[in-house]
Length: 133
Image (cartoon, rainbow, N blue to C red):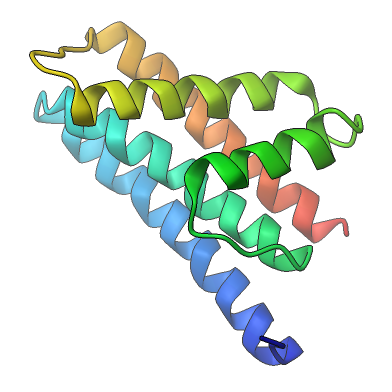
């Protein structure tokens, strides 16, 4: 499906707004000791920003592992984006999966706060990257 530029730009903007809104959601979840839910939203905030990056580069998928693989191959391995961001998204994906599907999973607040800080840095980096393209 070919998307018009104005539609594509609107969708990119929407995905970045979703990512930003998720930051506020995570703050509330951490404040209310909903740490497993916070891990889920931390991952999704980064996922939304990656969807925007994909759209900007004519790559669309709803599959999480496929999107992360595309990001790692085309941006991390090519040296366009620092490798620490590949580690951040991979770690968040694994923890989100564990929290959503495993039994009796709990996360320590310090870990969740560290992930939250990484999420904010990740989203800011994607936004900067898109502004400079």
